[in-house]
Length: 238
Ligand code: ATP
Image 1 (cartoon, rainbow, N blue to C red):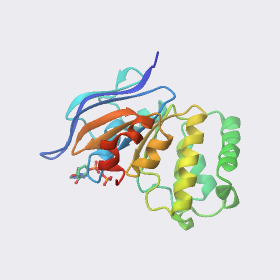
Image 2: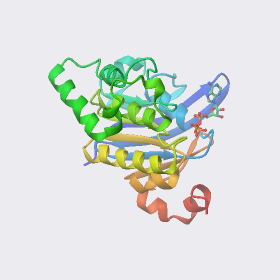
Image 3: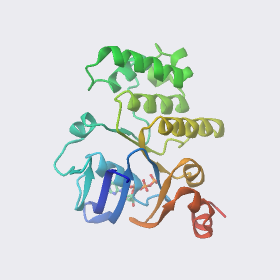
Image 4: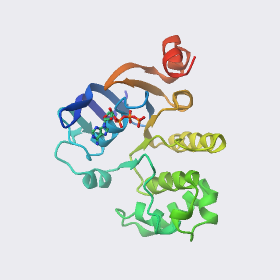
């Protein structure tokens, strides 16, 4: 039996009078890698922001670990295991890589384990290890993306939310980032991945949802969606 860690029901989110998310339902079960795909302006980032408690819901509800997140702040949700790797990365540019990673673990008190996790992140991202004392602002875009992901993992999240990790990266780095997302998922972290790169996202995901103009228009097993002519025509450029 699948257990939903995240359950979104009838969610509506508006900016002023304009509704960007118009009533959507989806869930992410424990251990799953779920992707939310769709074109520019579909409402994917807005949905993510509502889940992390950074944008208020206009209607509907979001349950995390079986309880509504209504009225809970972003900070409280992070402490409870909901980590976000934001679009545009948001690393602390004036801190070193090692310091950024320590910041990711600031909610934890298990210092010995934090040190062990730091070494794990350096094993997963050797580039970050080589540059551990370098200021994050001097990293390349791809390296900053890796740092943002590693920083998110340092909180030992139950659910990792990722907003367009492949954006702006060279093809080789895109390959690497998707490999890493798949590896992290294989280690048991539940992941919700927002991506415009629909084909790549569906290749690594268990299930997918397509968002269009604030609504979910298609959903299913990722492998089946990859073969679906409607999905291929609309989102995979065929
Ligand atoms: P992209 O893939 O281009 O990032 P998206 O699917 O993440 O797109 P959102 O960023 O959620 O889309 O935007 C959904 C809609 O909400 C868009 O029409 C956008 O213009 C609008 N929107 C987003 N942020 C704001 C804001 N702060 N104020 C007003 N409208 C906004």
